[in-house]
Image (cartoon, one colour):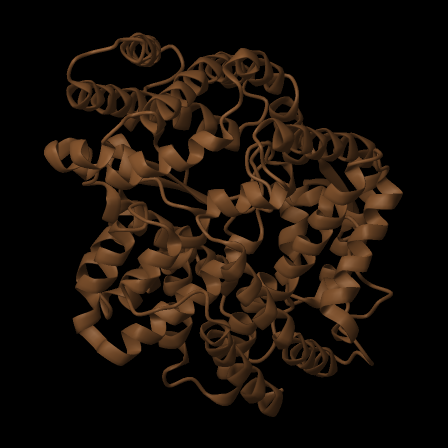
Length: 584
């Protein structure tokens, strides 16, 4: 199944694409001119500015997502690459206008009174007040334009190159006595194979392939993180982590509370890894290549249609609205399901707010993990459905809250499958759930430590592949500890995770842990309240772009600054580990 992007445009030659792009640029110019005016009624000007910004964002969302989604499935698409270049140049001008808008709003006297007077401003109150705060981190207008233009051939170019390298990287592997050249995403997908030799050989082939791209990937990473440090100074931030916390809409107190609970949970996760290793016949720790090995009852292999039917059935027990939504995503071809050459690995969901729909990229290979990934990404899509009625300016929510619906979906899927399962089936499902949690707690913590160290070292030198491998192995040893076989770790995880290569979002890791643990907390609320929680759940998702995380969480009685909240969420996983040890 391929996704159908014709809901946006029929192709890059569609006249509507060029027209929308031109209109977005015209609206940007209109907004820039408007902000130069000195009207008698500032409130009326702000109303007009917000409306213009809305229209500009709607046009740019359509154009930008169309380009992005085409590149995600064909990294060599020449038309998409040419359009991406045009888009990035336009975004430079639009970012300058957005910065001017922030500076303008930050200097408005009596903003609260204007917000109270004008309904449109009241609707966008959180956005406007956030602009006042963020204005402190806007670059000097004298240098902002040149810096943004340089980013196009700096961090953004490095990021684009890293995507092209990994999407087109082929791995040589022998299968049934015949040497084959396979996409990296396909080989990494073999980590869930029921065949031990397939998992091990795929891991060995993958590691053996990286020397061909390690220098290029190291250059990309150094370029991106070096630029991040420079921008940090120009935007008046103390650290790169502070920029990530601002983007995540959380403070240090919240992050520290969560990280404390995560570190406290590591011994429990190491028990899980060792129990799984024993079950698979290993002495000591678990080899990296067996992290995702299926255990328990033989995992069913699903066709895509069977996965669809399962998801529709499971979520129909929770909410008829969600069940219909999931069925619609399949029916209307919002999903690009299978791996192929040139396609990006992993999975993601991209919302197209002006259309009120979301597109899901997956690399489905039939395992329960693939079904769980679909449930996860369709949770994101459902989240998008809950904000589609809002202004596009209020529909943008931080990554910390972006994982709420996806984790909720994963948790519910496994919980429903566990009902009536025999011991071996339950072992398989527990392993699936704990394994996913381990990725989002243990591996994410290793990524956080890795990125922290890389950024610190990048302050004074460029790192070559061997140094990056050393940092990665150290981060894995700190987090996985004796849970893994130290002779079978993964020194190249920095080269295959696209998250490190975002030029605009750094520490693209801890929000996932936040999302898992917050999502578990929200699921616990559902178990307590039952069907009465459904309207509250939709309202929570709709509010995710309307306040800081602390305030949004308080809507469902959660205090994210309290370490005990995080401990309680992790205790849910620790109880699963206790049960898994008994069954393994």
